[in-house]
Image (cartoon, rainbow, N blue to C red; front, side, top):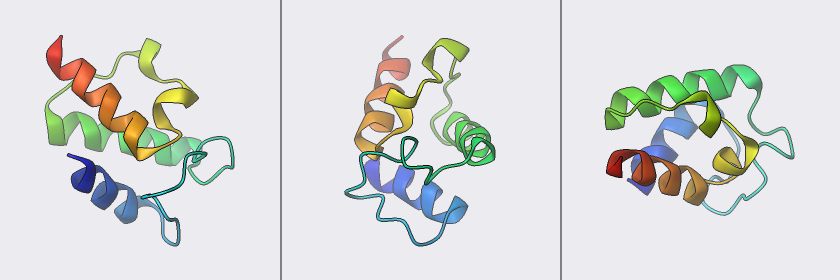
Length: 76
């Protein structure tokens, strides 16, 4: 799952080390448009619905946080 999310992110934004970055939102590596596209891609790829309550910086600051969020949503 992690590699798939990294591939999605690399398609959206060039030149970011998604593997180790833990401040994607805080440092402005992902724009609001990137987040919207990312949410759509994650929803399509993993067949999950990401509710508005999950769209917070903590869930998108790192790939690991995104993996944890998707795994949580898949369990619901």
